[in-house]
Length: 296
Image 1 (cartoon, rainbow, N blue to C red):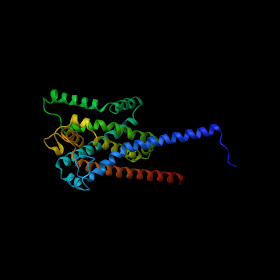
Image 2: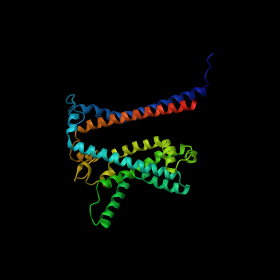
Image 3: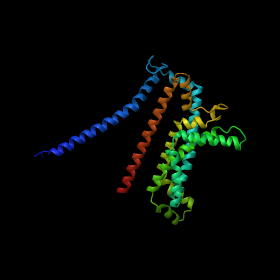
């Protein structure tokens, strides 16, 4: 026979259902607020209207005009180049720092981690202003007034933002690794460098890859540090480096954002979505292989 629920059990069940409903409603609300504007932007990338909300007919003209716009292509090229170069350098530096701190003494490791936390918890405007003051000091008192702002100052600014996050991505993988693995490789005849590449690095590759992707994301959407530290260089030639974020900000001052940016936004969104799906599939397969290996 079916057991009759007591008053307390029915109350607990109702509370559980209520909490579940409220939680799911909040999640769906957040998703709607986040993705509906993106869907609207994607929809209006297929019309040539200047303002969103006005439909002038279905067309691929914005996608054609996008690749013919030298201004947008230069900004896109600068953005991608800065993101790739700074991310690769930051990944190498952050990974080396994480490995070095992991094998350091406790006191040294605590100091390194404390310093690493400063850019993470600090406001980006504080970092940007600090870098500007430092570069101006070098420009005025060390370089004799020569203009120091260039691609290199912009690169330093992006790397300062990225390195701490690479460190934080690699650190958990080092902590999950068997501490005896490195010593075992040394006992089997490997040099320190060989043990590092054959024993340590393969174990932390997922963290390194995550740090690289996070670095690219931080660089692509950065505006404040870019605006404060940029100078002439890259595809902009003798002009100040223009990235997508600074280009959009400059266009907003003068008038509406170029409609071609809607097409570019759609392409970026689809690329990011594809990468996220592929990474998820790869991780799921890796987890399944690991489980099968343990069961075997």
